[in-house]
Image (tube, rainbow over all chains, first blue to last red):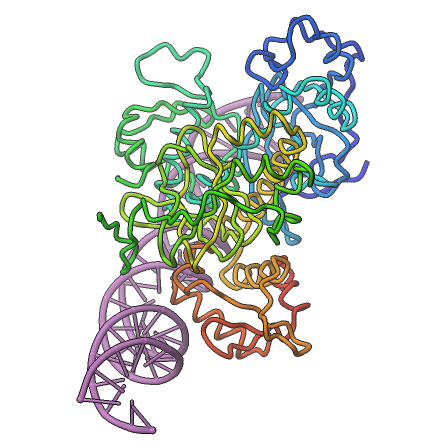
Length: 254
Length: 254
DNA sequence: CGGGCTCTTGATACGCCTCAATGCCCGTGG
DNA sequence: CCACGGGCATTGAGGCGTATCAAGAGCCCG
């Protein structure tokens, strides 16, 4: 198997996705309500299931390669993936983290303009390009839904441009943390008043997401901690002690 | 009229668009072939014309306000506009320059997530939200076209994130110049071998587009000029003396 | 309990920003 | 037609924020 160096890590190249079974059960999918699949009415679910294939991607493995021909679309049902673009010398920009309910593949013409790797073990539904096209013809609501999704992505992309082009490291981290809350990254055992949220990604991922280095991410988080705005129980968890203040910083008023 | 300070300039707020006439002639529109309107067949053009209103926006004036309720969609037929987002303290990120054929308004939910101002005198077609919705119901091809446009915008947005997050000033300028070529910003009187392209935007606009300052933009252009990669006949024109080298720099190999 | 990893922290360097002055272009008015 | 003035662009000097280089701390897992 060929290996592609990503920072200090080597990520196995495709094909690495593991087909689980060809009969996908959409009726029992707990992500259907929040995903594009909600556009298909209950009585027609068998059409959807026929077009989809459930797959499992091991942690750390790629399932979309930047530049590969875009033959498939994906819908994540479990786990988180990082989406990214690379420069020839290895510089990486993570364009987003895709969690359950996320539809992937819109940002593609003939080839994918981004890569995708599983941050955690990822389960997803795969649709062939032709299969999805057929579905869209039969269910116009699906196409409307995809347009909504694309518009929503576009709004987030512009927000991200503002962050990368004009915000300071401190503002970027605050924006990232506040954004995680609205994305529903709450920690399962978060019981207290203060919002506890999970960071399934490494500092390196956060850095490449925010256009910074791991050192700056670490330093900035430490500073926010010293100021009492956040707490860091461990490297993969953050407690927001003062969400209002963080929000102010994120929007450029801090 | 209320004024909003943008840098050293004051931009008149809406309403500033000037309705030209209610009867829009789509059949004679020279932008139809390249715009979303191409999705409407010739024999149904009267439906399109009925839904559209032609408008003229004076140079420097705003026609979309960030945060305004998104009641309209626009299709630019002449001139160039800048699209941008602002931070409370005035920091600005220009997300894109919209030229003839560009469809505007996709990146909107209930309110616009960006502002738009005419860089040059701009002529555009305005569609009401309901009017466009009706058109999409009658002409599914229009919705497909909008989805294509959205996907294309998404690809460009991700490219821009890579630029803002990971490229140097030199690489950003090279990317900008090369990008202008493919956007067809060739100078009308560009007759020589070397590509001459027009820069209708100010250095300030370029800086806010690339996440830099005007000084860095100016310095970097001067350096590229000193190296013989470009020529600067005047402030609003650039000649690409070595497009190949610029392309290499833009993609991170320079 | 050790090895290897990520994360953190420190010292220094560099690229871009900020502040400031000069130059250029172009429209205006004498 | 040319002198003047204002705005934008260019160029220079210095400072700041983040990157880079380097070392140590914490954590996970065998």
